[in-house]
Amino acid sequence: MSVLILSVAGRAGAGGGHNRRPYPPLRTAAGQASASASASASAPASAPAPEVRGQLPPLRSAASGTTPPLILDGKSYLQIGKGELKLSSQPQYQLGMYVEHVGARAQFGSLLTRAPTRAMLMSESRAQYFVIWGRFAKLFQLRMLKPVSKAELAGMFQSGMPEVFADRAPTELRQDAEALVKLIDRDLAEGQELRIHISEQAQIDLYLDGQKKVGPVNPKLARHLIEIWLGYHSAARVLRQVLVDKIEVLKTPVSKPAK
Image (cartoon, rainbow, N blue to C red):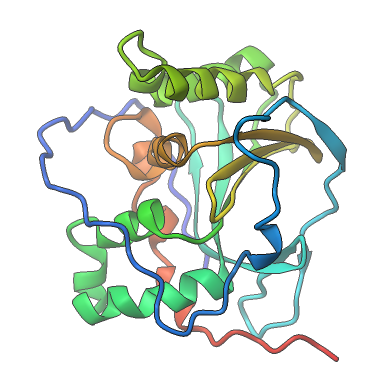
């Protein structure tokens, strides 16, 4: 799969004139194999205390033609886009957008019935809404292009979701967002990674240089988090096109596990 890189020299406008209603959540296709059945016993939302659960093993490639997926916790993730953010007001990083193969592919057919051509698929934010609302796991992989402090990383979340941290935000939503930011307890050097994993059940976990931090379970917060890059109101929205540019890779059949 070819890699599309976007470099940004200045801050993009807010684009606040967009009033299109989002597509409703996509329903799981009939006969879908659950992408997260093994995760159904995860910790309840009432106990999202910051926690470290060992080192995150490196994402390893699985043999799959020209576009090898990444394997995390035994599941295959496909990269649907990649870009770079180089704004002086933001941490500078290279970002890869991954979706869990089984779950995303099962729902992708529903999108294709409404948008059978690439032009239709990429217009009217269909691809972005598919990722934001789709009930499958997502993985953001941010590789730092320069050293970044924990305060700068926290600021990235706060500036990307200002409505979530506002006093008028629902109490539970704001508290979960604040708890998520508190998980950022270290600086990252150039080349180190921040990974953000969002499960099908909206369990949000952070990985700071391989160290896992268990975050809250909150579907609304998960959507706001994804919209930092795929929405309209953050500086990082300049990546919203390139991060879904290769979404058609979801047509790739799911490989059978090796015996």
